[in-house]
Image (cartoon, rainbow, N blue to C red; front, side, top):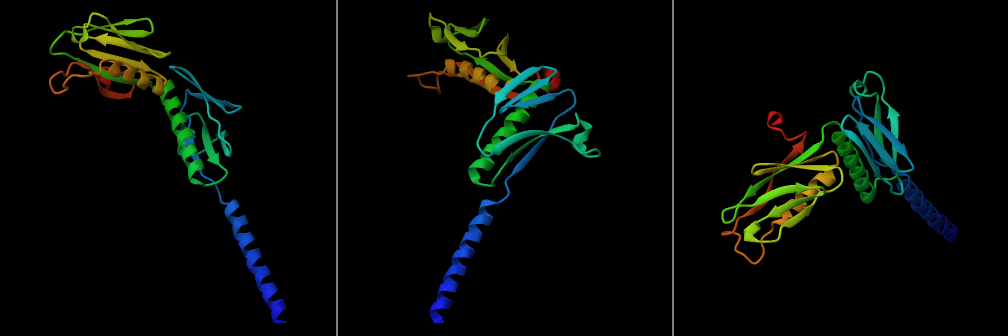
Amino acid sequence: MEGVEAVASEGAGTAGTEERKRKRGKKEGVSVSIPVPAGVSVEIEDGKVRVSGPKGVLERSLRFPGVKIEKRAVESGSAAAEGSGVEIVVESDSARRKKKAIVGTFAAHIRNMILGVTEGFYYKLRILHSHFPIQVSVSRDSVLISNFLGEKKSRVAKILEGVSVEVKGKEIIVRGINKEAVGQTAANIERCTRIKRRDPRVFQDGIYIVEKGTGSGEAEEA
């Protein structure tokens, strides 16, 4: 009898362990909802998200195993229903750390896409020089920086697709609807005038990012 009881106890313990594993496997995932404002349409197909709005169209591939993106109707009477009447839901099949991070990243990308097609993004850069006057001009898909530290050859910064660059006196304004492209273009310009083999406390000449935000960056929007 003692042997039978021992076997029964061991079997119960194994069953309990399996039950706990099964319950952990069924742990609910995470979900994030993004309201879609009026005037914006979102299409989702085969892991690609396409957002259209007053300022243009953005498309991005957002795929990850166990994470899905859906467009759902919003219940009438809710705050989100005041917009387009739909919301985008990003959810995972588990609450593991990696999938939670992916859900947050995908949600942030979609919010930025909606902001981009409704308001747009801008970066402002300031031209500073104390030794040699810097001349900046825009040529097609590049920013030309001439006479930097008296150099005869112009430095060139690439402008990414869909981004516009305007030079206004000592200020450069970078605009676009794709946040990553606008930020990368501004970084290209700033990096282009990085000083090497000189004391930065003495040679402060260069072009530096001083402001960023949504909109066009005009004074009346500040």
